[in-house]
Each structure stands twice: as structure tokens, then as C-alpha cells.
Length: 293
Image (cartoon, rainbow, N blue to C red; front, side, top):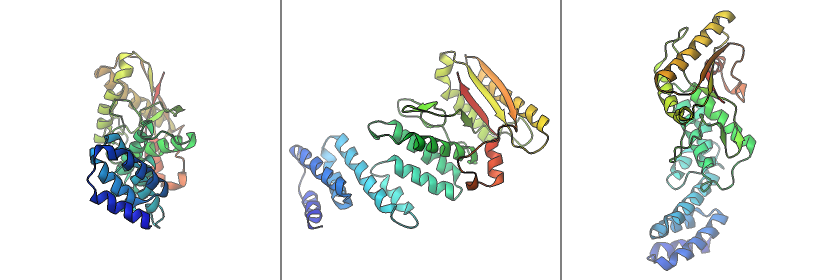
């Protein structure tokens, strides 16, 4: 403890010179190993005139230390997790904030936080050691479920380079995902798009621009919940898939599009059914799946 306090005082009191940056990095690594928030905060402030990459690295380690402390609380200290995002954005912090938001049924925020976590994982500099396959698949599923339940459309995540890493992505760092369940919503018992559905299709045109340029074939599969007559639901799901197909073609999609319907035959299967009410499971079942060829 004495060493930590002395280090903090020294860094706060001493002007930073260029030649000090190596020492700051060394001190930050020691502090990161000890999860010493005070020393990491001091080195973070002291690194202002160093290579920005060093400051970013220290910020990530400071955020990780704050995450470790926040997770020891019961309940988890959400405010501390949010505050830690000022310094860095570890995927674990973002995923936990997604879980907290989903727990209180704030699905719009949950979807955004889960997708932010996927962005951080896609960045091999920010996350050199990616999570295991099962964690990646589960995180993507959580993002998809929250997006389907959100009252408003949450844009699919993309990196600054334009790389798709959210719900629209086929894979992430070597892990292949199941076909994306798009939150294209319709007015009850009709083929009229809701505001959320319209926003989803606007984003989908942008997301599929690269596929379109390559003339790639896609398949759109409509699904309904199990309410009502099965034959009627099958026809409704086919009609809704056609609405999406026609929208994409009107807006310049150049590849082949197949539109199919499954009706109520393949209800959406969340990872944890017990986490959702029957109404929420029905809402997730009312979806359009995107399959790329």
C-alpha cells in the first residue's frame, strides 16, 4: 500500500518528460498486475504526453481493474462499470452492462451494449485473446434476442473500417454463427411494416451493399408465432418475406434473393427460455432470418 501511495504521489507531482514514458509504462504494468486502481489512474494521467497507444493500454487496464472491483459488489455496481468506460471498453464490462440492462427489460440498451462488446472482441488489438467459442456464440445470441425485443431498432454493429461484427455478421474471429434473425417487425396480422421494421430495412440495405456488389445470393425466411391457424401463419410468413425481398430489390440489391416462409414451424429458441415471458418468446419468433450463400 505504501508503495502504491508513493508511486501515485510521485506521478502526480512530477512533470512528464518524453524519456519518462518507458518508466510510466513499466509502472503501469506493475499496477495492472496488482489491479491497483490508484496507481493506474496516476499513470493514465501521466501518459498524456506519451504515445497515445500507451495511454489507451493503461486505460484498458484501469477499466479492467474497475470491472474487477465492481463485480465484487452484490448487486454488481452498475454505476462503477459505466464510469469505467471513460478509460477503456473491455468486452467483459460491456457484456455485463448488457446483462444488467436485459435484466430490467431495457432491451434497446442491452442490444447496444452486447454489440459494443462484439466490436471490442473483433478488434484484435483491444482484445488480443478472444473469448472461447461458446462465449462468443452466447454473446451474439444475447445481442440478437435483445434486438428482437427492443421497442426501437438498434443498428447492427460495424467497426470503423466498415467490417460487420454485430447481428449481420456471418462469423467473428473464426466462429461461425447461425443465420441472423432480423428484427423486421410488422403490424399485427398484416404485412405493413412498423416504424422499427422500416428502420431495420433501411439499415439492411446498407449492410448488404457489399453482398449486392458481388451479386451474392441471399435467402429470406419469414417466421410467425403460433397464434392462430397454421396454414394462415404460413401464408403470412411467406408474404412478409416477400415484402423484405421487394424492398431490397427496389433499393438496388443486385444479387439473387429467395423469399420463403416457415410460419409457426420453427419458433425462435432463446438460449434460456426461462428468462423470457411467453409474450416475449412470441415476439422473438416473429422474425425474418437472413441466410447468405
